[in-house]
Length: 151
Image (cartoon, rainbow, N blue to C red; front, side):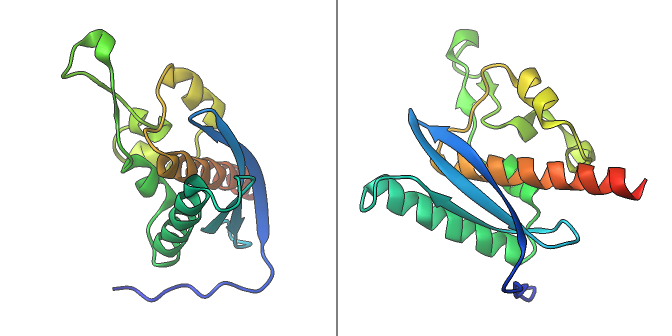
């Protein structure tokens, strides 16, 4: 097992609005100056609700995976797929946008809106997938910004 990255007390972050099952909430993704995404927190769910507890636990699991070296896009690509019943029982839609990108291309800085539009009706199957997708989107966005700044 690789060593866990210890986070500095102050770091950059980006807060984004999310929704799952008709419930809206926000997630804050924290990253280092080099753009490495290492944590996520959620807020805006009813305190004490089962969903709030599930989202808090999902954020802890995603943050620990990131801090132990799992790439955000790998987390995102590992989420469940949603069956595409309109094309028969065996056909599946990607459950999240990175499933649309195959192979090593998934690690390239990509325009998230372009991927979202390409995905059509694709959506994460769980709130964990929604959060992992958000973390990957922020990671891709930061990588694109850094690539533009370096180029």
